[in-house]
Amino acid sequence: MARPGPDERRRRVTTHYPIAHTPPPQPVAPPSGAPRPRLTFIGTGYLGATYAICFAELGYEVMGIDINAERLARLSAGQVPFHEPGLDELLRRNLAAGRLRFSADFAEAASFGDVHFICVQTPQRADGLGADLSFVENAVTALAPHLRRKALIVGKSTVPVGTAEWVEQLVGKHAAAEHDIEVAWSPEFLQEGYAVEDVLRPSRIVLGVKSSWAHSMLHSAHKGVFDLAANEDREVPVVVTDFATAELAKVAANAFLATKISFINAMAEICEVAGGDVTHLARAIGHDPRIGNKFLRSGVGFGGACLPKDIRAFQARAQELGAGEALRFLHEVDLINQRRRGRVVQLAADLLGRSYGPAGPDLTGTRIAVLGASFKPNTDDVRDSPAVAVATKLVRAGAQVSIYDPQGMDNAAKALPEAEYTASLTAAATGADLVCVLTAWDEFRYVDPAVLGEHVAGRRIIDAMNCLDMPLWTAAGWEFRGMGRPS
Ligand code: UDX
Image (cartoon, rainbow, N blue to C red; front, side):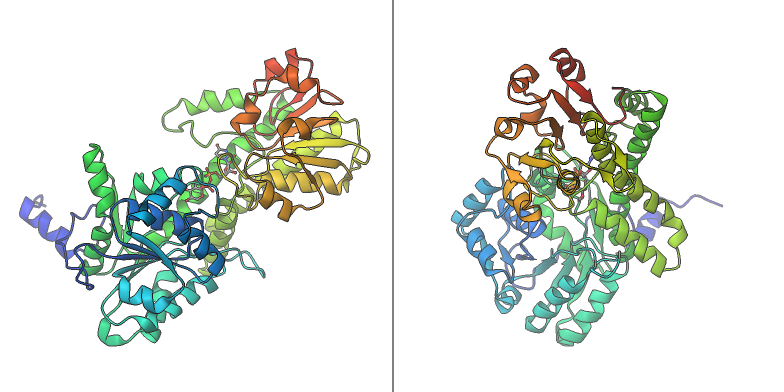
């Protein structure tokens, strides 16, 4: 068969729309009449607030919408309600420039915006593994009846595949048909602690669209990102695709990352019985560019608001779709992850000379310093934090636990009020029989073991993040245990 000529290839691109690598669409005028689309971000939690602030920084007129009055008041006053490096300054700058405001009024959002991003949470359902979509439903049904002209509603929240189609149906029910409101899906991939960079300089942008108008409007809504990249002589890969693929892009990425972490943690389990060192093993395999060394840090496993709940919701959705078998391995990924948390408690019992029975060890009378509460460094987020989970197990086992974290103390104190919280690393460690490093903050990684040794009751340490310099600690007289490392 003859190869298609350039004209035919071009025709295919336009007729088989949408496809990946579709060229930038012809610009269309924003329905509001503004020169650039005006953007709203519905839900001003971690995701929505970060996006709203960063897109204002890119020069867009932005409105953040939420039903939480206290959160809105704080944001309007220039205070970011969570810890994210660099965001405070951007918030204040863009409020002052008049490009950014916050409101609880959906009618105001509807009359202001051309593109409305849904950024609400999709937590794990209380009655199962699936995602709770009630926040998405509330956001769409609160906005849709107020829309008085054409607009684009774009999902950013992490959702089960099929949600975008359902959102379209909701819009069909709740918005006036004459305005022909369209829906698109564009997942986010931001990592806490690097969220500003991830929004301004994303590794890729995925656009799930059904029409050229939606593609065009969504492209315009990201043009600031493309312009910034062009100024910096970078390219941002764009994947233009259907709704299902766009939705899957997020959960598939997180499932892959979780699998990679659990893979190396499974290797840690093997090293523990075979006598190897998983940190060396990770380097030995990670230098293979096909494998890569990112996300091969063994330790206490993954936590946070995304990875754990996303792999569960993905399994639940696959089951509903009749493809549960395809994701059965994610159950194993979850189990490996949970086992790492138990392993720290086992090591604690071992170091403290307590036996480990079927109900766990009895750690009564011991004092344990827990360094770290946030699920990873550079955030105050303790949602499904391995550090808090391990601290909880230690408290339940009867230990007296004192916790220090540079940012996550307030949130941890709400999650685990039974522990003691101290103002410094040294205060937490003073009089401790055992120190557990459960979050890899730099403050812990570079502490002087000889100095810390002066404050503790016993020089015993568990490096649950494999982030400490083991020879340095053992040379300072500490009994040291890592994860998947020889003692
Ligand atoms: C993750 C994804 O990275 C991001 O793309 C998505 O949008 C949201 O979920 P985040 O939850 O911020 O981001 O954290 P991430 O940096 O991915 O870490 C997740 C967990 O994995 C943390 O508990 C971290 O400590 C752990 N982790 C990460 C490891 O245990 N080993 C590694 O090698 C990397």
